[in-house]
Image 1 (cartoon, each protein chain N blue to C red):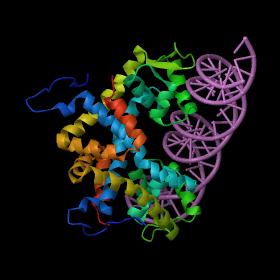
Image 2: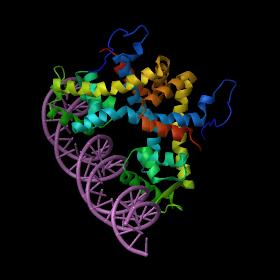
Image 3: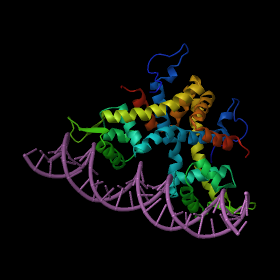
Image 4: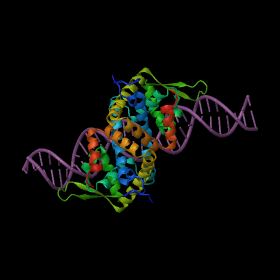
Amino acid sequence: MADRTTGAPTSGESLLFLTDDQLRRGIEAMFFAYRGFTADPDRILAEHDYGRAHHRAIHFINRSPGTTVNNLLGILGVTKQSLNRVLRTLIEDGLVEARVGTRDRRERHLYLTDEGVTLERALSDAQRARMRAAYRAAGPEAVAGFRAVLEQMMDPELRRHYRDVSEGPG
Amino acid sequence: MADRTTGAPTSGESLLFLTDDQLRRGIEAMFFAYRGFTADPDRILAEHDYGRAHHRAIHFINRSPGTTVNNLLGILGVTKQSLNRVLRTLIEDGLVEARVGTRDRRERHLYLTDEGVTLERALSDAQRARMRAAYRAAGPEAVAGFRAVLEQMMDPELRRHYRDVSEGPG
DNA sequence: CTTGGAAAGTCAACAAGGCTGACATAAAAA
DNA sequence: TTTTTATGTCAGCCTTGTTGACTTTCCAAG
């Protein structure tokens, strides 16, 4: 199987960036970089006895206030039972408020409380600081390439979520 | 705190790529892309009742045959108990062989068996296919930027591991 | 109006894979 | 000989995934 491109270019163009070795380096870069990506928020979360699942929920509730549980499920890609446990602790701790929907009373609309906003700011400040340093060191053209490759790496459905949440109406 | 760059450029140069909004989009891109990055191997692993922890061990043993347990701990960033559980199952299942060191007989040198190599190939073929498609769609300049930003995102110690494993002697 | 299905959310139980702590063994180093 | 190092193991805990069973609410077909 496998369409390998182990050695010389397979066409007239320079396709050296598609060799197995280059691909492996990209794979390992993703692995090591993701550790750095989560390291700073992880430290803050640990102080609050929270985990990454809490961070993800807080991030997207902050991004889309009033979002429903079901909407969040689609974005996060976990089961509702798994998300529910995280949301329950955030609600008990007073970081998230769940308002029963007015049109459809089955729905819960989620909002960060002031305390939730405070934690979100601490987490995203830390994560942005790392990202900002990386962006600054790599430069604007590298950033464009970074985002382009990541977007291509997403599943199409996730890419839609990415574009919705990233570019949609505030 | 936070050195925010919410609005206009803070210098004569175009620093728009450092705005909080651009940084948030990069953060969300990492989140969604990592899901895609692991999706294909995850499906294969599930058929074998393995998880990502097994994949990581297999990947780096394949990359550096004969590596020791201790070395692997540094690369993977987990506790020996956690790694040991994974290695034990891989050894029991005949995918990994642990040879007692000749110079230092406390050490275990890890190798993939033929069966281990077969699974590694299936996993990395799947992961490379996704990466190759993303690289090809984004183009060589984007790939350079992608790798540059990821490298800057790593913790310095992890960056060293990345360079060792990626550029070191085979 | 009633009823049945679908949708949203909750509760219970389980598994993977992190973690810490304590301890055993073997071998290298001092 | 004593100490340190590398490894493995057992026990137990936590987070965060999973499935299954259930309630509440809504809506639409009869």
